[in-house]
Image 1: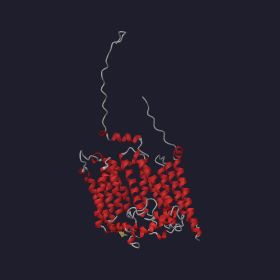
Image 2: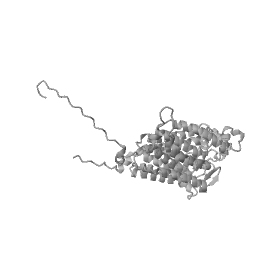
Image 3: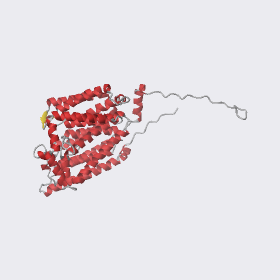
Image 4: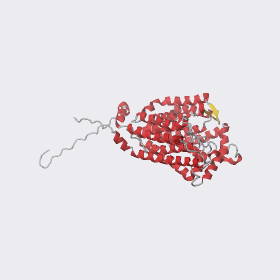
Length: 470
């Protein structure tokens, strides 16, 4: 009897050697961000500001976070994606650099909680990744309606207990707990669509028509969520989640009719929403005719475009611009400040890193064998990509402003933490499901598999040879 051999566990030395591409990318990012900090500090010194040792605190926290992240993944023998972490390191480091340059992160006060948002986010990202790797992320699919209930409860609680500011509703300290919807709603949609993919993809024969009966539970949840978000006047989150819903339905069922039908409904629904929401009407008017109210509703758009235009091709140099002239520069309009100081080249470089990040995330979704994992990856990447498009499009006047921040770059603790938690989940999915886990899952659901029929044996034709033998 042949004895089964257990797989040899990976040694620490092998894990260290395996992650050398990640180590090299993180080192390059640290050097690039360090050079940026040197430029900012040098610019301040030239203007007469004295150099303090604490000025290096954001850079030291950034480098320390990257080192701790890499060593933790090596110690855990993690075998997931490495390039995704490299692009994150650059984007998040670029965001820390921009915030430090604009004075949002004050290193003179070591107790400032904003300084420790990135390290805290890295800790949460690693916790999620290590807890759900080796295929354990599949367990999240069991909490389908738990994620739905949590999403509705979260929005309802903020609507009842939050405070209004600039037309939207925020939690205590102007935080936005509804950022968690970008994870909880995606987990609900991935579980629901994966479980009912066959029925949701059945649009009948002849003239295509959606399976209304099978869509009713999803439609009920979505109407409740949309109503709460509109009551909160969070149009940006409303748009992000609707785009994500259509993308996930298309990927999960293979039906392109979902985005088409959704686009038609969105056109009609958007028109009705603008008829009843003056907040949205003012933004549309400012987008179409900015010079009719240059010191009022159009002030943000015109000042942002002015900053982009003054940067030219190469920009005025890091630390040499005037972000104080741009409204909400550290948050919604940070891309305008980047264009002013780093020019068109800097803006293109930033967009390219975002494209690499999104393409890598979609590549992970394409390679995973789990339907649930594929949908979660697609959903989370769709959320981040839509958020990026809404921010860049609004700042450049390609689309109306939505008040959405730029992922990993803009100031905003809730957005950064949620983005890093999403990345931890994508990293866990990137490692794949071990073969042993797939076998256990197949044994747990024997009714879903059919035994292969044995091939029917045909009787051999017996002929008499020339020698007289049978």
